[in-house]
Image 1 (cartoon, rainbow, N blue to C red):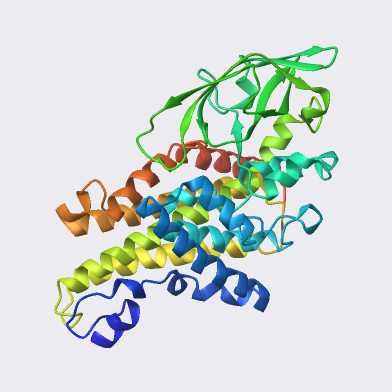
Image 2 (cartoon, rainbow, N blue to C red):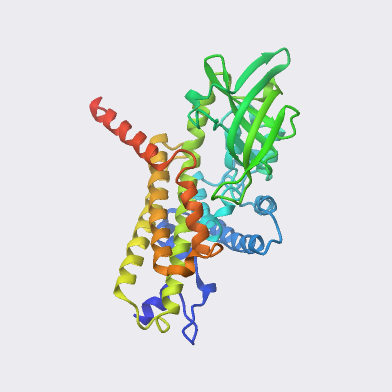
Length: 398
Protein backbone atom coordinates (compact mmCIF):
# COMPACT_ATOMS: atom_id res chain seq x y z
CA UNK A 1 0.00 0.00 0.00
CA UNK A 2 2.84 2.37 0.78
CA UNK A 3 4.29 1.91 -2.71
CA UNK A 4 0.89 2.60 -4.24
CA UNK A 5 0.25 5.81 -2.36
CA UNK A 6 3.80 7.04 -2.90
CA UNK A 7 3.32 6.50 -6.61
CA UNK A 8 0.03 8.43 -6.55
CA UNK A 9 1.20 11.43 -4.57
CA UNK A 10 4.82 11.18 -3.48
CA UNK A 11 6.01 11.34 0.11
CA UNK A 12 9.14 12.69 1.72
CA UNK A 13 11.28 10.60 4.02
CA UNK A 14 9.49 11.82 7.15
CA UNK A 15 6.06 10.93 5.79
CA UNK A 16 4.97 14.46 4.91
CA UNK A 17 3.28 14.92 1.55
CA UNK A 18 5.53 16.47 -1.06
CA UNK A 19 3.05 18.91 -2.56
CA UNK A 20 5.38 19.71 -5.45
CA UNK A 21 4.82 16.22 -6.83
CA UNK A 22 1.12 16.89 -7.45
CA UNK A 23 0.70 16.52 -11.19
CA UNK A 24 -2.28 16.76 -13.53
CA UNK A 25 -0.54 14.30 -15.85
CA UNK A 26 -1.64 11.38 -13.67
CA UNK A 27 -5.16 12.27 -14.72
CA UNK A 28 -4.43 12.49 -18.46
CA UNK A 29 -2.47 9.27 -18.95
CA UNK A 30 -5.40 7.54 -20.69
CA UNK A 31 -5.69 10.20 -23.40
CA UNK A 32 -2.06 10.84 -24.31
CA UNK A 33 -2.27 8.44 -27.25
CA UNK A 34 -4.78 10.78 -28.91
CA UNK A 35 -2.14 13.48 -29.45
CA UNK A 36 0.99 13.57 -31.57
CA UNK A 37 4.47 14.50 -30.37
CA UNK A 38 4.18 18.20 -31.18
CA UNK A 39 0.82 18.43 -29.40
CA UNK A 40 2.19 16.67 -26.31
CA UNK A 41 5.11 19.08 -26.37
CA UNK A 42 2.67 22.00 -26.42
CA UNK A 43 0.74 20.51 -23.49
CA UNK A 44 3.95 20.12 -21.51
CA UNK A 45 4.91 23.73 -22.15
CA UNK A 46 1.39 24.84 -21.31
CA UNK A 47 1.40 23.16 -17.93
CA UNK A 48 4.81 24.52 -16.95
CA UNK A 49 3.71 28.02 -17.93
CA UNK A 50 0.34 27.68 -16.19
CA UNK A 51 2.07 26.54 -13.02
CA UNK A 52 4.23 29.67 -13.04
CA UNK A 53 1.33 31.99 -13.91
CA UNK A 54 -0.93 30.52 -11.21
CA UNK A 55 1.80 31.04 -8.61
CA UNK A 56 2.11 34.71 -9.64
CA UNK A 57 -1.65 35.13 -9.38
CA UNK A 58 -1.76 33.65 -5.87
CA UNK A 59 1.10 35.90 -4.81
CA UNK A 60 -0.68 38.92 -6.27
CA UNK A 61 2.26 39.88 -8.46
CA UNK A 62 0.14 40.00 -11.62
CA UNK A 63 -3.46 40.16 -12.81
CA UNK A 64 -5.45 37.64 -14.82
CA UNK A 65 -5.27 39.91 -17.85
CA UNK A 66 -1.48 40.05 -17.57
CA UNK A 67 -1.42 36.26 -17.32
CA UNK A 68 -3.56 36.02 -20.46
CA UNK A 69 -1.23 38.33 -22.39
CA UNK A 70 1.76 36.22 -21.35
CA UNK A 71 0.05 32.95 -22.30
CA UNK A 72 -0.74 34.37 -25.74
CA UNK A 73 2.85 35.57 -26.21
CA UNK A 74 4.01 32.06 -25.35
CA UNK A 75 1.74 30.59 -28.06
CA UNK A 76 -0.55 28.84 -25.58
CA UNK A 77 -3.55 31.16 -25.38
CA UNK A 78 -3.84 31.17 -29.17
CA UNK A 79 -2.58 27.63 -29.84
CA UNK A 80 -5.74 26.45 -31.62
CA UNK A 81 -6.39 29.68 -33.53
CA UNK A 82 -5.75 29.39 -37.30
CA UNK A 83 -2.25 30.18 -38.48
CA UNK A 84 -3.51 32.77 -40.98
CA UNK A 85 -4.66 34.98 -38.09
CA UNK A 86 -1.50 34.52 -36.03
CA UNK A 87 -2.44 31.41 -34.07
CA UNK A 88 -0.65 28.12 -33.64
CA UNK A 89 -2.92 26.14 -35.95
CA UNK A 90 -3.25 23.18 -33.56
CA UNK A 91 -6.35 20.98 -33.66
CA UNK A 92 -9.30 22.29 -31.63
CA UNK A 93 -9.34 19.12 -29.51
CA UNK A 94 -5.92 20.10 -28.07
CA UNK A 95 -7.66 22.93 -26.21
CA UNK A 96 -9.51 20.41 -24.02
CA UNK A 97 -6.44 19.05 -22.17
CA UNK A 98 -5.09 22.61 -22.00
CA UNK A 99 -8.29 23.62 -20.21
CA UNK A 100 -8.01 20.61 -17.91
CA UNK A 101 -4.52 21.84 -16.99
CA UNK A 102 -5.93 25.35 -16.48
CA UNK A 103 -8.58 24.07 -14.09
CA UNK A 104 -6.05 21.99 -12.20
CA UNK A 105 -3.69 24.93 -11.71
CA UNK A 106 -6.23 27.73 -11.12
CA UNK A 107 -9.87 27.80 -12.18
CA UNK A 108 -9.72 31.60 -12.37
CA UNK A 109 -7.53 31.33 -15.48
CA UNK A 110 -10.38 29.67 -17.39
CA UNK A 111 -10.37 32.24 -20.23
CA UNK A 112 -6.68 33.14 -20.05
CA UNK A 113 -5.40 30.20 -22.08
CA UNK A 114 -7.68 30.33 -25.13
CA UNK A 115 -9.46 32.84 -27.35
CA UNK A 116 -12.65 32.60 -25.34
CA UNK A 117 -15.55 34.56 -26.79
CA UNK A 118 -13.28 36.09 -29.43
CA UNK A 119 -13.94 32.85 -31.33
CA UNK A 120 -17.27 34.36 -32.34
CA UNK A 121 -15.32 36.53 -34.77
CA UNK A 122 -13.86 33.41 -36.41
CA UNK A 123 -17.36 32.29 -37.36
CA UNK A 124 -17.63 35.12 -39.89
CA UNK A 125 -15.10 34.81 -42.73
CA UNK A 126 -15.22 38.56 -43.38
CA UNK A 127 -13.48 39.14 -40.03
CA UNK A 128 -10.44 36.97 -40.80
CA UNK A 129 -8.35 39.86 -42.11
CA UNK A 130 -9.54 42.45 -39.60
CA UNK A 131 -7.32 44.01 -36.96
CA UNK A 132 -9.89 43.32 -34.22
CA UNK A 133 -9.49 39.56 -34.63
CA UNK A 134 -5.71 39.77 -34.78
CA UNK A 135 -5.72 41.81 -31.55
CA UNK A 136 -7.78 39.09 -29.87
CA UNK A 137 -5.37 36.41 -31.08
CA UNK A 138 -2.57 38.51 -29.58
CA UNK A 139 -4.32 38.46 -26.21
CA UNK A 140 -7.05 41.11 -26.06
CA UNK A 141 -9.99 39.86 -24.01
CA UNK A 142 -13.45 39.84 -25.60
CA UNK A 143 -16.60 39.57 -23.49
CA UNK A 144 -19.99 38.27 -24.58
CA UNK A 145 -23.23 40.03 -23.66
CA UNK A 146 -26.30 37.86 -24.10
CA UNK A 147 -27.92 37.51 -20.66
CA UNK A 148 -30.76 39.93 -19.93
CA UNK A 149 -32.42 40.88 -16.63
CA UNK A 150 -35.73 39.27 -17.65
CA UNK A 151 -35.05 36.79 -20.43
CA UNK A 152 -31.84 35.24 -19.16
CA UNK A 153 -29.48 33.88 -21.82
CA UNK A 154 -32.30 32.53 -24.00
CA UNK A 155 -31.86 34.63 -27.13
CA UNK A 156 -35.41 33.90 -28.25
CA UNK A 157 -36.64 36.07 -25.38
CA UNK A 158 -33.95 38.73 -25.69
CA UNK A 159 -36.32 41.53 -26.63
CA UNK A 160 -35.15 44.40 -24.43
CA UNK A 161 -31.90 45.02 -26.32
CA UNK A 162 -32.74 46.57 -29.67
CA UNK A 163 -30.57 47.46 -32.66
CA UNK A 164 -31.99 50.32 -34.74
CA UNK A 165 -30.50 51.08 -38.18
CA UNK A 166 -28.96 54.50 -38.81
CA UNK A 167 -27.44 56.01 -41.97
CA UNK A 168 -23.95 54.97 -40.83
CA UNK A 169 -24.70 51.72 -38.99
CA UNK A 170 -26.70 50.81 -35.89
CA UNK A 171 -27.70 52.14 -32.49
CA UNK A 172 -27.99 49.66 -29.62
CA UNK A 173 -30.26 50.28 -26.65
CA UNK A 174 -30.93 47.93 -23.73
CA UNK A 175 -29.32 46.15 -20.80
CA UNK A 176 -27.27 42.99 -20.32
CA UNK A 177 -26.64 41.51 -16.89
CA UNK A 178 -24.14 39.12 -15.29
CA UNK A 179 -21.54 39.84 -17.91
CA UNK A 180 -18.17 38.32 -17.10
CA UNK A 181 -14.94 40.25 -17.80
CA UNK A 182 -16.89 43.51 -17.52
CA UNK A 183 -13.81 45.56 -16.57
CA UNK A 184 -11.05 43.64 -18.38
CA UNK A 185 -12.68 43.19 -21.80
CA UNK A 186 -11.44 45.42 -24.59
CA UNK A 187 -14.66 44.77 -26.51
CA UNK A 188 -17.93 42.88 -26.25
CA UNK A 189 -19.98 40.81 -28.66
CA UNK A 190 -23.49 42.06 -27.92
CA UNK A 191 -26.59 40.21 -29.08
CA UNK A 192 -29.53 42.44 -29.95
CA UNK A 193 -32.86 42.18 -31.70
CA UNK A 194 -33.10 43.39 -35.30
CA UNK A 195 -36.80 43.32 -36.20
CA UNK A 196 -37.81 39.67 -35.68
CA UNK A 197 -34.27 38.27 -35.66
CA UNK A 198 -31.21 38.39 -33.44
CA UNK A 199 -27.87 39.80 -34.58
CA UNK A 200 -24.41 39.98 -33.01
CA UNK A 201 -22.38 43.19 -32.86
CA UNK A 202 -18.74 43.89 -32.02
CA UNK A 203 -18.66 46.87 -29.66
CA UNK A 204 -15.55 48.42 -28.12
CA UNK A 205 -15.68 48.79 -24.34
CA UNK A 206 -14.83 52.49 -24.79
CA UNK A 207 -17.98 53.14 -26.83
CA UNK A 208 -19.60 56.34 -25.52
CA UNK A 209 -23.01 54.67 -25.43
CA UNK A 210 -21.90 51.90 -23.03
CA UNK A 211 -22.14 52.12 -19.25
CA UNK A 212 -20.58 49.39 -17.13
CA UNK A 213 -21.51 48.65 -13.51
CA UNK A 214 -19.85 46.03 -11.31
CA UNK A 215 -21.65 43.14 -9.58
CA UNK A 216 -20.22 40.77 -6.98
CA UNK A 217 -20.94 37.06 -7.57
CA UNK A 218 -20.75 34.37 -4.89
CA UNK A 219 -18.23 32.40 -6.94
CA UNK A 220 -16.13 32.69 -10.10
CA UNK A 221 -14.53 35.83 -8.73
CA UNK A 222 -11.39 35.80 -10.90
CA UNK A 223 -12.70 37.99 -13.70
CA UNK A 224 -14.94 40.94 -12.90
CA UNK A 225 -18.71 40.72 -13.37
CA UNK A 226 -21.31 43.38 -13.98
CA UNK A 227 -24.09 44.83 -16.05
CA UNK A 228 -23.83 46.57 -19.40
CA UNK A 229 -26.26 49.33 -20.32
CA UNK A 230 -26.46 50.56 -23.91
CA UNK A 231 -27.90 54.01 -24.45
CA UNK A 232 -27.92 54.58 -28.22
CA UNK A 233 -24.48 52.99 -28.53
CA UNK A 234 -23.44 53.63 -32.11
CA UNK A 235 -21.64 50.95 -34.11
CA UNK A 236 -20.64 50.75 -37.75
CA UNK A 237 -22.39 48.64 -40.33
CA UNK A 238 -19.25 46.51 -40.60
CA UNK A 239 -19.34 45.77 -36.84
CA UNK A 240 -22.18 43.30 -37.30
CA UNK A 241 -20.98 39.68 -37.16
CA UNK A 242 -22.54 37.24 -39.61
CA UNK A 243 -25.50 39.27 -40.82
CA UNK A 244 -28.79 40.52 -39.38
CA UNK A 245 -30.33 37.06 -39.03
CA UNK A 246 -27.28 35.11 -37.86
CA UNK A 247 -27.25 35.84 -34.12
CA UNK A 248 -28.91 32.68 -32.84
CA UNK A 249 -26.87 30.46 -35.16
CA UNK A 250 -23.61 32.15 -34.10
CA UNK A 251 -24.53 31.79 -30.43
CA UNK A 252 -25.29 28.07 -30.77
CA UNK A 253 -22.18 27.30 -32.82
CA UNK A 254 -19.96 29.24 -30.46
CA UNK A 255 -21.27 27.63 -27.29
CA UNK A 256 -21.08 24.19 -28.89
CA UNK A 257 -17.30 24.81 -28.86
CA UNK A 258 -17.18 26.79 -25.62
CA UNK A 259 -19.13 24.43 -23.34
CA UNK A 260 -16.71 21.48 -23.74
CA UNK A 261 -13.88 23.83 -22.72
CA UNK A 262 -15.82 24.74 -19.57
CA UNK A 263 -16.36 21.02 -18.95
CA UNK A 264 -12.64 20.24 -19.20
CA UNK A 265 -11.74 23.17 -16.94
CA UNK A 266 -14.18 22.03 -14.25
CA UNK A 267 -12.84 18.48 -14.38
CA UNK A 268 -9.29 19.78 -13.97
CA UNK A 269 -10.33 21.74 -10.88
CA UNK A 270 -12.05 18.65 -9.48
CA UNK A 271 -8.89 16.61 -10.05
CA UNK A 272 -6.93 19.19 -8.06
CA UNK A 273 -9.42 18.91 -5.19
CA UNK A 274 -8.90 15.13 -5.12
CA UNK A 275 -5.13 15.55 -5.02
CA UNK A 276 -5.51 17.96 -2.10
CA UNK A 277 -7.68 15.30 -0.44
CA UNK A 278 -5.08 12.59 -1.03
CA UNK A 279 -2.44 14.86 0.46
CA UNK A 280 -4.64 15.35 3.52
CA UNK A 281 -5.16 11.58 3.88
CA UNK A 282 -1.44 10.87 3.57
CA UNK A 283 -0.53 13.51 6.13
CA UNK A 284 -2.81 11.74 8.61
CA UNK A 285 -1.81 8.14 7.85
CA UNK A 286 1.81 7.68 8.86
CA UNK A 287 3.26 8.48 5.47
CA UNK A 288 0.77 6.33 3.57
CA UNK A 289 1.46 3.11 5.43
CA UNK A 290 -1.97 3.00 7.10
CA UNK A 291 -4.92 4.08 4.99
CA UNK A 292 -8.58 3.70 5.83
CA UNK A 293 -10.48 1.59 3.30
CA UNK A 294 -13.45 3.96 3.28
CA UNK A 295 -11.27 6.87 2.22
CA UNK A 296 -9.67 4.79 -0.52
CA UNK A 297 -13.07 3.76 -1.87
CA UNK A 298 -14.33 7.34 -1.99
CA UNK A 299 -11.14 8.61 -3.62
CA UNK A 300 -11.27 5.75 -6.12
CA UNK A 301 -14.88 6.54 -7.02
CA UNK A 302 -14.17 10.23 -7.60
CA UNK A 303 -10.99 9.57 -9.53
CA UNK A 304 -12.75 7.03 -11.77
CA UNK A 305 -15.57 9.43 -12.58
CA UNK A 306 -13.20 12.27 -13.42
CA UNK A 307 -10.91 10.14 -15.60
CA UNK A 308 -13.83 8.61 -17.50
CA UNK A 309 -15.41 12.04 -17.96
CA UNK A 310 -12.28 13.71 -19.36
CA UNK A 311 -11.48 10.67 -21.51
CA UNK A 312 -14.99 10.65 -22.96
CA UNK A 313 -14.93 14.39 -23.46
CA UNK A 314 -11.69 14.33 -25.45
CA UNK A 315 -12.66 11.20 -27.41
CA UNK A 316 -16.00 12.78 -28.32
CA UNK A 317 -14.27 15.86 -29.71
CA UNK A 318 -11.37 14.06 -31.37
CA UNK A 319 -12.56 14.18 -34.97
CA UNK A 320 -14.49 17.44 -35.11
CA UNK A 321 -13.84 21.12 -34.67
CA UNK A 322 -17.56 21.86 -34.92
CA UNK A 323 -19.21 19.84 -32.13
CA UNK A 324 -22.88 18.98 -32.04
CA UNK A 325 -24.65 21.52 -29.76
CA UNK A 326 -26.62 18.82 -27.91
CA UNK A 327 -23.44 16.80 -27.25
CA UNK A 328 -21.79 19.98 -25.96
CA UNK A 329 -24.67 20.59 -23.54
CA UNK A 330 -24.45 17.00 -22.26
CA UNK A 331 -20.68 17.27 -21.92
CA UNK A 332 -20.86 20.43 -19.85
CA UNK A 333 -23.75 19.31 -17.64
CA UNK A 334 -22.22 15.89 -16.96
CA UNK A 335 -18.74 17.26 -16.30
CA UNK A 336 -19.95 19.97 -13.92
CA UNK A 337 -22.00 17.36 -12.06
CA UNK A 338 -19.03 14.97 -11.80
CA UNK A 339 -16.72 17.79 -10.72
CA UNK A 340 -19.13 19.03 -8.06
CA UNK A 341 -19.59 15.57 -6.63
CA UNK A 342 -15.84 15.09 -6.38
CA UNK A 343 -15.15 18.48 -4.80
CA UNK A 344 -17.97 18.03 -2.29
CA UNK A 345 -16.63 14.60 -1.33
CA UNK A 346 -13.17 16.08 -0.82
CA UNK A 347 -14.49 18.96 1.27
CA UNK A 348 -16.65 16.72 3.48
CA UNK A 349 -13.86 14.20 4.03
CA UNK A 350 -11.30 16.86 4.90
CA UNK A 351 -13.66 18.34 7.48
CA UNK A 352 -13.20 21.73 9.08
CA UNK A 353 -9.83 22.34 7.43
CA UNK A 354 -11.37 22.57 3.95
CA UNK A 355 -14.02 25.04 5.09
CA UNK A 356 -11.56 27.84 5.67
CA UNK A 357 -12.52 30.56 3.19
CA UNK A 358 -9.23 30.51 1.25
CA UNK A 359 -8.54 26.78 1.40
CA UNK A 360 -7.93 25.50 -2.17
CA UNK A 361 -10.73 22.92 -1.98
CA UNK A 362 -13.18 25.51 -0.60
CA UNK A 363 -12.33 27.90 -3.45
CA UNK A 364 -12.71 25.12 -6.03
CA UNK A 365 -16.07 24.06 -4.61
CA UNK A 366 -17.35 27.63 -4.46
CA UNK A 367 -16.41 28.23 -8.09
CA UNK A 368 -17.83 24.92 -9.29
CA UNK A 369 -21.12 25.69 -7.58
CA UNK A 370 -21.19 28.96 -9.52
CA UNK A 371 -20.57 27.03 -12.75
CA UNK A 372 -23.64 24.97 -11.90
CA UNK A 373 -25.73 28.06 -12.74
CA UNK A 374 -23.56 29.78 -15.33
CA UNK A 375 -24.41 29.47 -19.04
CA UNK A 376 -27.60 27.55 -18.36
CA UNK A 377 -28.08 25.51 -15.19
CA UNK A 378 -27.21 21.83 -15.29
CA UNK A 379 -30.81 20.56 -15.21
CA UNK A 380 -31.98 22.57 -18.27
CA UNK A 381 -28.94 21.34 -20.22
CA UNK A 382 -29.84 17.73 -19.39
CA UNK A 383 -33.48 18.46 -20.21
CA UNK A 384 -32.51 19.83 -23.61
CA UNK A 385 -30.43 16.75 -24.45
CA UNK A 386 -33.20 14.47 -23.20
CA UNK A 387 -35.77 16.23 -25.35
CA UNK A 388 -33.53 15.94 -28.42
CA UNK A 389 -33.07 12.21 -27.85
CA UNK A 390 -36.78 11.54 -27.34
CA UNK A 391 -37.57 13.47 -30.52
CA UNK A 392 -34.92 11.52 -32.40
CA UNK A 393 -36.59 8.22 -31.46
CA UNK A 394 -40.08 9.58 -32.12
CA UNK A 395 -39.05 10.79 -35.56
CA UNK A 396 -37.29 7.53 -36.36
CA UNK A 397 -33.89 9.17 -36.96
CA UNK A 398 -30.72 7.08 -36.99
